[in-house]
Image 1 (tube, one colour):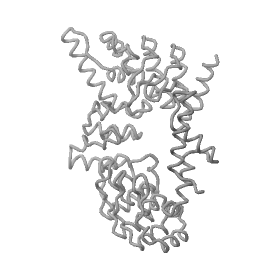
Image 2: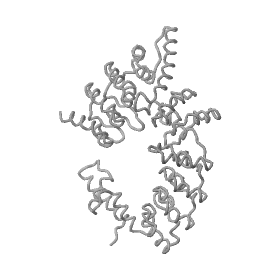
Image 3: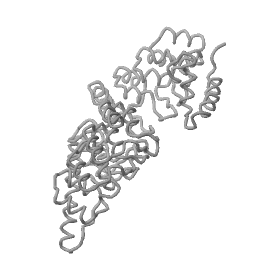
Image 4: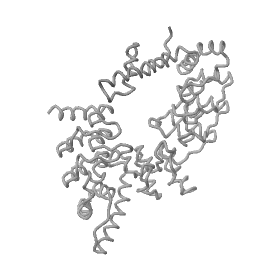
Length: 426
């Protein structure tokens, strides 16, 4: 009897009920893994892929992804209506699947069989061109464009257009993607501010902002937390673009969709030094105003972070003296931000001045300790400082219900795993 995915799903639910008799916290993924292993597969995904491959649609999409033109031709000759097949869960066409994997021969076959080069899938509302561009497959991009594919591609759910898919994802800053971008530009596409920042194109950023100053306040989609160009530049480690955007007037305190400033995205103090300088200039104005008015300063975590980043320890001391709440709850986020940036001087200073190493703070959608953040950002040099100050590695975050060791293991932070295991063993 052929395996049936629906039957296996029911089996997994039954297995989950059994697991929860001894472990109330068991997850469906645990039960699915058990079922997969019972059927000789290393994961549920592998089991599902095998079952999918036994169907006509599954074989078609497998052939499209792997470039098996012979099998695809044979199947489409037998089942010509299947050229319009859609794959779950996002209704990819065969052309999407082939373009994503850079299978030029398959793309050519499917276009000759009548597939629309501008067909949209239902997940990100993309065309095959978006995926070929994201993969850096110039030959496929060219073939799709020659077949009438829209090289601009407005309307995708990330609001990046095809040129953004070729430039704005991690790993797209290489020669292959630059060649795709050059081709798109030659066919009529134009940079927007995010693609220009991603490619470190200072002159293009200046041109865009000169034509539309509001571009500095542009927002990515909800999928990227509505980041501004400055958030994006910091998060993508583009220090030259950070400096340029600040020079052009970007707001160093602008909040993204979660209410976080650009500094939240920094993984080292060097990335956003111009942001810290701009914030510190505002802080200096507040210090002068407080002196004139003979009053206490009013300051937040970013004022303190900027002072520490720039080594202005007198200002940092004044800020916490006037605003002792900055050191409560882990420095109201200052300790977590300094940890995420790997700023050992700032972390040590905060701990020495009484910041709580066990305070939990909202990072994205989970309340975490500084140890969790050190694991996330891979800063093993921070871990001993936190542990020596009394950080408890057994504290769990509020979303994943995991301690810092669990985070370090999940993100494959080998050095941090050793540090935390040694602490536990001791």
